[in-house]
Length: 181
Image (cartoon, rainbow, N blue to C red; front, side, top):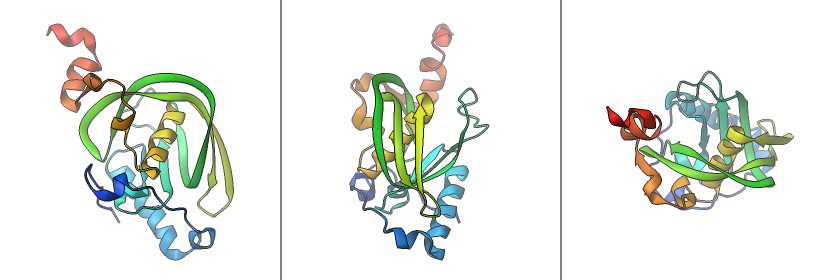
C-alpha cells in the first residue's frame, strides 16, 4: 500500500523518533509497514524513506539505489532496512553535494555530509547488521537517519543561497554551462 508522505510542517518530521522494540519487528503488522514503506519509496522515486516521513515517529528507514533515473551515475545501494540505527563517523571530511527530499518537494540544496561512516542497526528480521558506507551511500544513510532525529536537510545547509526549486536547479545549478541559453 502506498503511504502518504508528510511534508515539511507536519509534526512527525520534527519529532525525535522512538526506538522499535525488537520483539515487534517480526510481527505481521511491522513487516507490512516495511513493505509499504518500500513500495512508497519506489512510487515517489526516492532513494530512501524514514518512518517519520510517513507520519510514524519510530526509528525505521529503508533505502535503495538501483538504476535510479535521478541518480544514473551513482553506485548501487542494495535494498536496506535500518531499525534503531546508530551512525559512527569514520572520516570527518565533509563533502557538499545537492540533496532533495520527498518531504520537501520541488526543492534542492547543497548539503555538507561526512564522507565515510559505519551504521549498526537491526535489519528486517531483527538481525544485527553493520554497514560501512562512503560517498553517496553514506549521504543517503545520513539523510534518512537525520529524519529519525527530527531533522531535514535544510537544517544542515550552511548557505541558504544554495537552495533552489527543482526546475531551476535542473536548468541552472545542475548544468551551469546552460546558464547562457
